[in-house]
Amino acid sequence: FNGLRSYEGNELVAVMQRFGMDIGPHINAYTTYDETVYRLESPDNTTEVIDLCFTVMRDWLDGALLDVDEIEAERGVVVSELQGGDQVRRRLSQQLYEFLIPSSLITRRNVIGTVESLQNLAPQEFVEFYKEYYTPKRATFVVAGDIEVDEIEAQVIETFSSATNPENPGQEPDMGDVNSGSGFRSAVFTEEEFKYHEVYLYTAREYMSKPDTRATREAELSMAFAERVFKQRLEILVKAANSSISYGSASRYNVENVEIGYVTVDAIAGKLEEAIMVLEQEFRRLLTFGITMSEFEETKAVVLNAYERSAAGAETRESSNLASALSDSVNARSVFSSPEVNLDIVSDA
Image 1: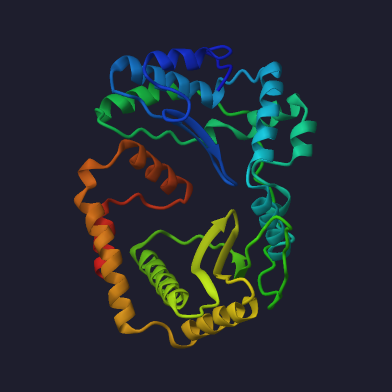
Image 2: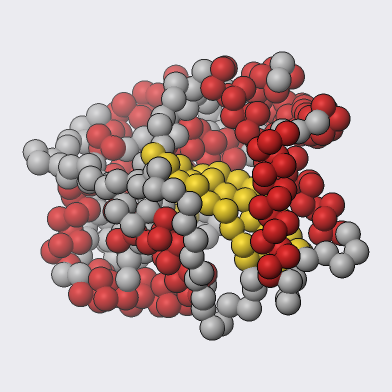
């Protein structure tokens, strides 16, 4: 956050602190595989604070000074962050991706990079990348809170309409092949410091974006119900006498052009083979016979209750949560729907 068109050095932090804002609770940013998000949470909606937030956001869009000294100072901070994280889990994840999707660019482009890439990246390379990819064309500005919509819309136009894109913006990278259809394969990933025995069944395929329609969401609900039932079945086995597993779950997620799904259990020490059999048998049972009507009704009741509570509290949603939901819908290219609409879809499931 150091060095902007309107605030040189670390002036910005001092200015925001005078308005009761600080890095962490009110000023933050994060980067994933497919987005960078800058967040400002203002303590009030006075004109002075709103103007400050708009100025800062515009500077973050195309007014970062990218001073060489600031880049060098931050380099060590990022390296420390990388080295101080969960190194064991990160290395295991890297092994998994290299096995699961070896031809994908994801295996060679960790979000935070590597110690070598961070130490060897020339400041000019960083500046060029930033200017080519952090462009107005790729940006979305979100405001949520107790605001006058017409006034904020006019301020958005006034603040951001003069932003220009570079003549030669960065091109979207070739993400590589997903290697779906390669058949069943097995692998063992080990780390001396990792003391758990986790068993996974993974599947990876190319992510195919679908129009965000009611039918699409109903299909997603079916998968979510099945995952929830599978986890509940494993929870029952966890509590059984002489169980071979201490945890179980199922989930799906997308990373760029890859859709990954998995079922998993944690094996009790000395019972790894038994745990593998439990996972395989329970997954096969789900695929072969599906879920029972009683399991469906119980799961729907739990999910429906959560959506009913969400709809009931729609008018008291936190502005920060609302902004995050709006931002997520933009990145996912999905419709931002109200809690009432979401409840209606679940009710008809």
